[in-house]
Length: 225
Image (cartoon, rainbow, N blue to C red; front, side):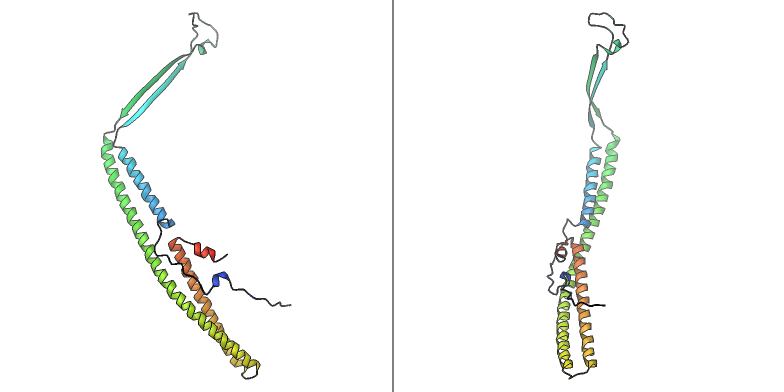
């Protein structure tokens, strides 16, 4: 099988100099919070509607009546089949109507108390959700800072292992050391590279968690261009 040599370029999402975009607070526009906030707005609207039930309602009434007859303007009768649909006469009716359900005063008061309790419950849910998200965001920010330090250390260890391997490779090619010694150094280099990659993976997982909690994926989206 013919083999062609090729080089793998460093992927944009495996950068060793990842810039941490720190976010201190969760915005109120976060989808999780927006759903709860919309529920609060809905309950407040319900409270406004229930309040209006205690007041009387005013209605405007209007009507129009149109009918035809077979009497001509001169008083003569038209015996035709369609005569009843000619010579229209129109009547109009306009009025105001006022109605007041007295029991609505009591039921409105009960409904308002019920809705107020619902609003308090949803508001408490909103505050709890926001507090949990801000706590999680603070925790992930701290872990990201620690992981960045760990990533730098792993990067240095990988670079030192690569320098040692290159040095031993030169000595092996010069016949100063055996193949076994070179393979041992190579295994150390592979372990260092593996630990560096795993540290990068942990960091990116933390960055994804941070983006989810903060609701801001702009930084991650720009890393894959």
